Length: 415
Image (tube, rainbow, N blue to C red; front, side, top):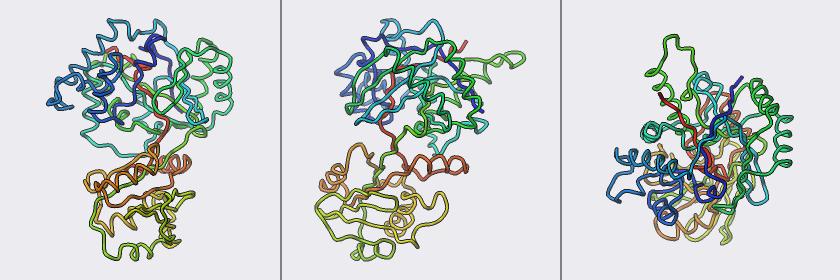
């Protein structure tokens, strides 16, 4: 069973929402963020990537970056570009892209549910990335970016939330990056709010879809706050015992492909070696986009090849049968010696939102010499991995559309 709770949101005025809202800090480089921030003084990137307001020579992880983030957040509040609600509430957040919509519940979830395994993960995290967000949350005394969570089995409640959105005027309604439409509603129906809390008490688990580093960081900050501020009997709940989340039904989500480009020394008989594990199609100029599991596209020397994994190359276990695992075990490791994809400089990753044309561009530029297009894992595969207590290979999932940052901030109210 899990606990979800309304909160006093810090959020932009309706007329500034589209200006404040930004892409997540972790999908933009400092240079990309700096360019966007220079064009928009209201952009939340001034808070989430505060290095953009400092000289380029300053490291994104320098102490003054986190100090600048705190200063910028206070400036946004003082200028009323962000305001804190007087009363706690739930919100609905709908994202619509290419005719497909997903409707999520904006709330806060508990540190203890994550500690106890009721909020499940499917990825490992890196300490240096955790430390960055820990320092950011510490400096701001707030969760500035939401965690993207999902769940199963609340069809009746999901229908009521959709009905509420249809019957009420949106608080925000704008189209932003990648032509995604963003709409937000505040739930003012007290009975519905109570029903939401009660319904999730019957849900056995929530699952992290996107934001593992943000979750680990938020939890570690909460635990440190708890240790430092524990009252006499330890029973009083504090705001830092919760972190900002958006919860979406699993059946409304879509995972996009997360493709690979490599710059490696290719064996002279590379294609022949691949035939041991894959059936290959003849070369073609048109991009080969995988249409089902265990099918891959290979771009090499200006040509595309289709690769179909042979049955003997497909393990039966929940991790081994993932396409990212098959590519790793049959190609990246044995043929290129790439063992740790998170740290090996010879490999990089391209989210499916960029299309197969981006793979061609990267290879044709000479920066990489081969690209692999993958079929994405399903939501059921992701949930099954999490339920089994296992970890998916790095860079397995790419969720679109992305939740924008800046529409909601959760203050920890540390005393």
